[in-house]
Length: 452
Image 1 (cartoon, rainbow, N blue to C red):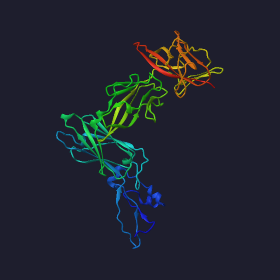
Image 2 (cartoon, rainbow, N blue to C red):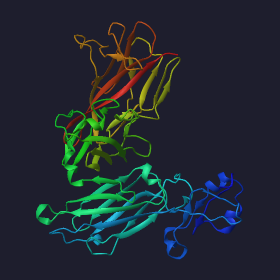
Image 3 (cartoon, helix red, strand yellow):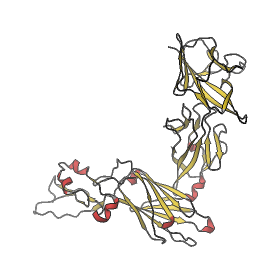
Image 4 (cartoon, rainbow, N blue to C red):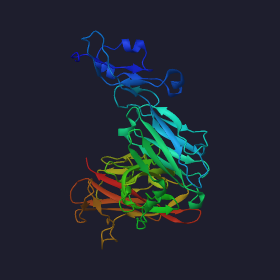
């Protein structure tokens, strides 16, 4: 019969006596963490801990059965032997992204550490031999990139958070290389865990991820295995959800997408918004950006993680972020990539020296500029550009319109016609010519008319 209110927790190879003696409450005990480094396991052992044990002191000595659980987990690999396969674990490099080596809770499954990257290898050449790659603590969701050194191919898998932050796990990466006769360098990976749950990840089926052929040509260019996202034909170009870019096999579903390295140090480029849509930023990147789209694909056989190269060409013109001018009542300045004109009158405003207003690639010259959206049948009028509200709603041409043009002397002229003083938003299309070969390109910039 247990003694009410008396419980015990057992630890081994973990906290020292001084650390344990400082604990005063059960909550402090439950927050206890082991800090043995993986490389110290050979001398200090693997940290272990039990759950709460009820004690019975009625006989003077409490005898209990305790189930100790390893605090650490381990990652192993095995090349499955099959006909025509000659490589072993030594042919593969295992790049692990985001595992925790710092510390792990002894009595609960939780992780607050962002983790580090590791590269693990094995010297074993034997097939069907399970080799240990490394130990780690409870982690956030982490990825393992399995790279074949002989073929140069790689497959990436992800261990999800609900599994990665659990203690006492053993993951065996079962690698299934295909014989050379069936495709050099092709292999699949099965992730097997101790609890007899398996995640089957068939990387050979990564070919299921095929780009649609009807993607908008003014937003997408496809070059071999690279997607080029064009940000020059629209403002804050909306590329839609990456889940809609691909043709999938029946039963397959894209469950997650991520973008990597597609903004510069000033956060200019292309971002994935909370609603799942990829969109260009209001300020345009001034250098070419190269990054990746990470796609997680799931079907009844498991999960595939595929990376696709993405390139964002740099803009050749943009509003000058440092530009500001003020008159008696008027103020012109650039904010967050938008040219704001405050208190404009209803006459044509001339910008005699346009270069301070615009940041232009010296290899290009401005050929022309005009409103992006012209009112049908009003093309010859000075103010023929359609406007929008801040929310993006169209404003009737009769209520307001704007003009933007450049004369033969390079003087930019901007004007606004309105019935009432409200905030109006328009888009200006620039046509640029490259000086060395005469090729033409476009860029769309945003202008806002405001009243104080």
